[in-house]
Image (cartoon, rainbow, N blue to C red; front, side, top):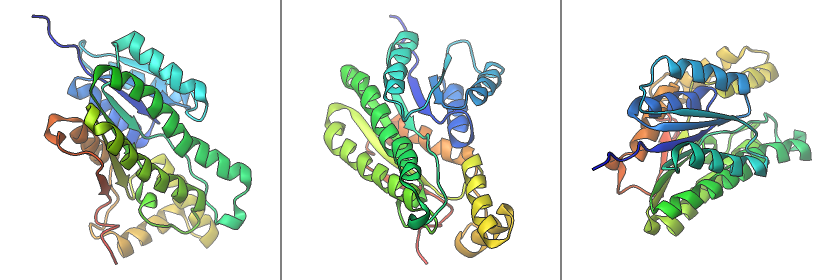
Length: 264
């Protein structure tokens, strides 16, 4: 009997931070990976790093594209099918931020965040879900951030987009779990990523402080673990949710935040 083919994971925002760590973790676990990101240079660095460590049974394909562009979803689907025969796991991780209260958020700023974070997630999910439904199996994990669980100052567009992702996840779980596709949502808090660094730098600039000063003050005042998380800690949860050990989990919203959103 021929061995079953290796499963395939699609990861958006795969060139850095949580996406990069998750791509490497999937490859190490024996999965093929389709890595999608607008940052072509970052994808090339990921490819070189992966080539040095992944085994010959798995493959990595990269796609430099913007998930806000509807064409990207179809390109992702076609590349996954052509290279690996289908899609088993989808990690919707790509996103961007805009640091401002609502009255400082122009329509173009709002559209950029919503089109990437929420509409882009919808477009990629719809294309990947089509292949999952054909196979009768799959796991979708969405990255919604702690900003989706609660409002955050200077973050009107971003928080709104992430709250939408939480409810999209719940809708997916209700509509497709019975067809073999589980959907869950992670909500990372302060994780050492480029997006987190940009956020803190911009907040710090408004306060006359460095980004690192703002971050450390926030950590000490609000995170029970009193530290920032790592992309690898988030990647471990994504892989768990994809695994048979999580076979009875669908529609879950899981904070990964050192206790940040547990309460006051």
